[in-house]
Image 1 (cartoon, one colour):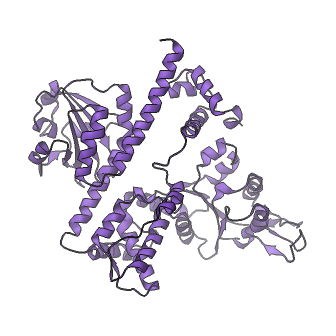
Image 2 (cartoon, helix red, strand yellow; image 1 turned 30 degrees about the vertical axis):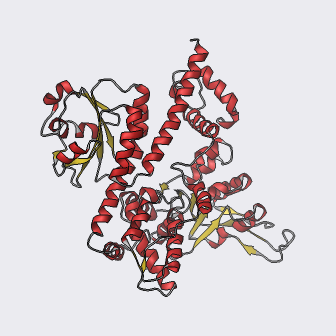
Image 3 (spheres, one colour; image 1 turned 90 degrees about the horizontal axis):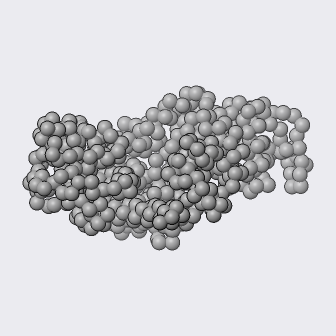
Length: 524
């Protein structure tokens, strides 16, 4: 096999691996219970990794003990039901402390064990090797995946890379099953009202307008507390519908400027020819149609906060003017001759990848660095499902009052379906979904949730990044550009992109030519 054939074969293997990862992730995303997970594990996953046994251990909230959450052999699962093992057993803790898969030689298991362990406790007849992988998604319930092999060194480098790629999908699956089991246990002898009462107590004890107590949203609240009291600019990042404006208002309300207005500008909603007038205002007669003087948003926000929503959609010519105003804190109205000084705090938000926008030449680097003083990333709703009961309570109360259905509640099955749903439209979709469901409910209980229609789901999926389908060429181009930019435009050499991508520089250059990647895309 010559060099060209070898490179082609390597690229084809990578592409197959990419599609396999996407396929396996999709299977796991659709799992909502033990039986469904068992089917995927003993089917698609076993076919890909050729393991003999597959097990997952999860910890309690104190992280001192772990139990067998799942095993692909029901008999072994039954024998270990209810048994607790020490987290510091030499296996579970070793996996948690490693970012990479940890390989254990079964020959030395008895010597390795520091205390009673799940691995040494179960029958290891003919098992020669165990591979452990940490699944750390929820900080209070970290998990570990154990793969058991009768034949050592079953997994090659490609298989291990694929296994690493499945860390997050597997962790999310475990988290979802645990959450659904928790909801089912709550509702075993009661209705969803119990869950809502707990959520109501949490809402009453929290003055924040940001609803939720998950780890992901607590991080956001902490960042808000850290930056609110200063006058530093904030860049809020997140998918559509995640609540970027709510975060902006929370920052403003906790700042020294709270008695002054927060003025919002939606950069994507204003026609290009009107944006300058909208931001800076104009004098009477400055252009056709300017029949009176107009005060711009910057002037209206003086001593307060200016919220620039969808900043990634601002036209490039306006980006230059905006940068100048941010730097000099002054501007002139269209048609005006006098410089107007302003004291404005800037909070910007976008659902776009501004790093990619810069690489593609659609967003100015100097403006990005000016805005990106204190970035806050808002998690999508699918990554904070613990907050769904509280969010449901908030919106049910809101729209029940508007619809004259004050005593309406959500059934256990309805809440379960909402917890299992992926929410491509995030909180905005959940809000509209509950509003529809309340209107459609015949009695005092919402038994069926009115999710989006298929056409609406397709539209909403434009903001859903987890399994958003793009042409392979587009994904390759985006990824290669990011790596080249990370390497400061260097293609070859020890610190070049080719080394990072593990391909010869000639192959990378050829790939760049096919994808239309030119120097102007990654160099100033």
